[in-house]
Amino acid sequence: GRMNGESKDGPERSSRGAVWVWLCWLGGILLLYVLSTGPVVLLYDKKLIQPGSPELRAVQIVYWPLDWVCGETPLRKPLGMYWHFWAPQWFDRQGNPTPH
Image 1 (cartoon, one colour):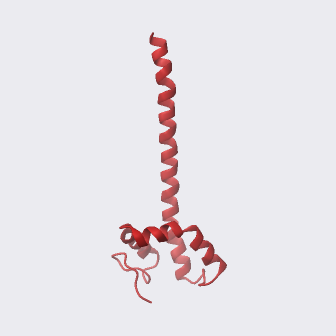
Image 2: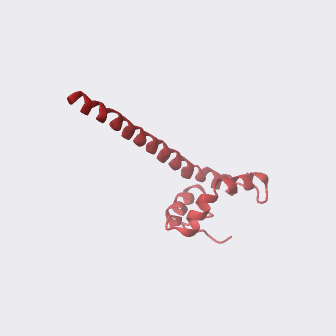
């Protein structure tokens, strides 16, 4: 009886562990994705990405989910505060976009 109980728990425990590993990887990738916006904002600020350029179009495609998040969720403010570190001319300390 004991062997069967152990063999049942074994795969269940390992599959639960695999789910946690995948969730950790997913969370890490998502965090890197969000953090990568800082250098992109800097490149745009330094005019290394020009308005109307193919590079800007690619950036808009890659980061459109964050554009939506900024417009539709309370995460706009923390993201703006993060972007302030990269481009203080574009975002104030409270994370609000500054008019240009």
